[in-house]
Structure formats: structure tokens, C-alpha cells
Length: 127
Length: 242
Image (cartoon, rainbow over the protein chains, first blue to last red):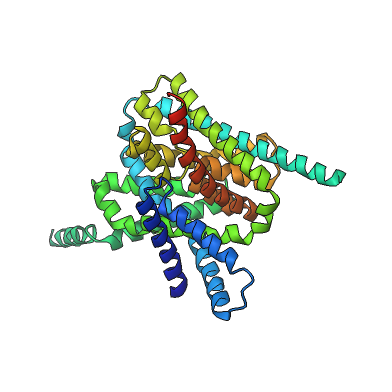
């Protein structure tokens, strides 16, 4: 457990350092995610027992953290409710834009991706 | 009277310590999660929204400032970073699925991100919102830390962006399912990807609670759209005069 927590923190730390050093707009944790993913792929067929055991441990810890992903948004979300006055007199307009744009984006993206996937499947079948 | 005084002393002590706020946050979340499961995962019974409202009403009722609460609850907030790194695991586990759909992932990512940015801009213009608010809204579909960074870069207000981003997540998680059911999208990879792309971590959490494949593609879109949007928006500002 502790080993996997150490590795996850370490990758975030490396990510944050890279972000600061190169002044990137991509946040440190996302860089950490990419680096961890690359490391996992590189060690895919390793026979080293230590690395394989560690990977199993990271999987268990990650699954635990991700299963409570929603909880992690509560502290910042409370700030949203407490600071709603920042929206001043634009509540309805801002909420309206968020509502319609979000729903349309979800619909557009899902339809597009499904259409491409279906097209691809048809293509494969013809072959 | 003495008893009441003693209780007050305990309260003064407790509210200055993280333990109380951590317990409250987890407790409120358990209530939200219980109701969500009890409702058979009804998207309108969003566990994040319920726990936020519970904690906020307690703060308002007791007159405790948000800064004091956050100071206590920041350990939970801190875990957002490690949780993002941890998303590498589900993506790795499904890498074969991702390899198979590389083309559709790439096209949907670029088209979806552009759609999110331009629809936000056009609707906001239509509503005659101030330009500062419009800039603060443009990166709203990606995860809060990225969105705030972009907002600062293009002349928005980062704290306003944080508010708008969280609301976006809750709206997507609560109403996205209905939209996709009406449109009859059955492809779980497409459903999940759209959730992660349009409503970041909160949408991803919703997708994960419903279907594993959808959850993984949501996590993938969350990471990819964060990267794509932080490249697209600054680039758009160089190319077009908004």
C-alpha cells in the first residue's frame, strides 16, 4: 500500500516539477498521468517479480482512489456555493449557457464518435 | 448554563481543527452516495451536488467562513492530484481498446473540444455577457486546475472559471445521460468519451459508476481534452481576435 502511494505521489511530483520548469499550461498531475502510463507500457512484459508485484499494488490503490473520485470535488464545490455572488446579476445567462452548451457538446461528441466507430466496423466487415 | 458553555468551548476547539471538517465532508458524501444508490443511480440525484449542498448549508447556518472550512478539508482536495495520476491505471488496462479506436478518439477529441469552446463562446455572446465572463467560461469543460490556468492566460477570472467548471461537471453528470438516451447512443466508448470531454472529473465519476468501459473512455477523454484544450485555446487567441 505504502509503496504504491509513494509511486503515485512521486509521479505527481515529477509532473509538477516538469510543469514548473517548462512553464507548461498542462497541469502537473496530467503530466504525471502520462509518465506513469508510459512507464506501465514500457514494463508491460517484464519478468521482474518486484516490478510486477509493485504494478499489482498500484492497481489496487488506484482503483480505491478512483472509486471515490466524486468525493474529492466536494471541498472545491462547497466554495462554488459560497462564492456564487461572483456571478453577480448574470446567474440565469451563465447557467443557461453552461446547460445548453454542455448538453450539446455531450450529444455532438457521442454521436460523432459512434458514427466513426460504426463506419469503421462496416469497413472491416467488407474486407 | 454551564453545560451550554462547555459545549460551546468544545465547538470552538473542534471547528479550528481539520478533523471536524474532514469528518463532515466524508459524512455528507456518504449521505449523498447512499441517496444516489438508493435512487438506482438516477443521474439527477448527483452525490457531489448533494454533499456540496449539505456542507454549504451547515457553513451558512453556523456562520463559518469557507476559508476556514477549506483549511480543514484541504486534505481531501489534495487527493485530486494523486487521483489524476492514478487514472493512468484504467487507461493502461484498456489500451487494446484505445489502440483499436485511435482514429475516432483523435477526431472526436479535436471536434468535441472545438465544439465545446465555440458553443460556449457563441451562446455567451448571444446572452450579451461581459467579455471577461466569456473568457472565464471558454475553458469550462476541462478539469478545474487546467481550466483556471487557461482562463488566467487569456484574461479571464480564474476563481469565476472554477465556479463555472464545477457547475459544468454537475450539469453534465446530471443531464448527459438523458441527452444520450434521447439520441439513442448505444456505443459505451462514445458515451463515456463524451462525458469525460464535456464534463471532466465529475462526468467521469458518473460514467465510472455506471459502466466500466464508459468510465475508462471518460477518464481518457478527461486527460486528453485537458491537454488538447490547453493547446487549442491559446492557439485560437493567436489566430482569431475574439
